[in-house]
Amino acid sequence: MNPMDVMKLPESLRPLLPLFEKWGDATSDTTRYALMDRALDDPAVMEELKEWHRRWSAIDPANREDWLDAGPLTGNFERAKVYFTHMLMYGELEIEKR
Image 1 (cartoon, rainbow, N blue to C red):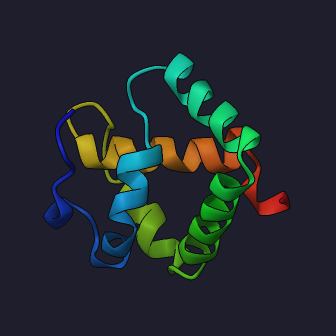
Image 2: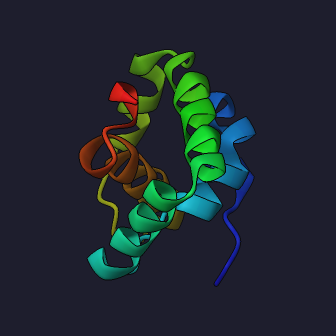
C-alpha cells in the first residue's frame, strides 16, 4: 500500500498521520470491520484508539471538517484515509463512548 503524503494533510492533522495510515482503511467495509474487531478484542489497541480520540478532539473541528468536506474522496488518498479512520472510530467503534 502507498504511504500517505503528509504534505497533503492540513498541518493540524499531520501529527496523526501514523494513526491514519494504520486505521484508515479505504479499501472495503470488510477490511474496516476486521480492524474494528481487532480493536474490540485487544485492550491495548483500544487504549491506542482512545488516545487517538483525545488527540483528534483537540484539533479545531472547523479546520478538519472544512478539509474533509473540500472535495470528493475519490482521487484523494489522504482525505479518504482520514475520512475512513473517522468513520471507523465514531461510526463503528463509537470511541467517544469508551
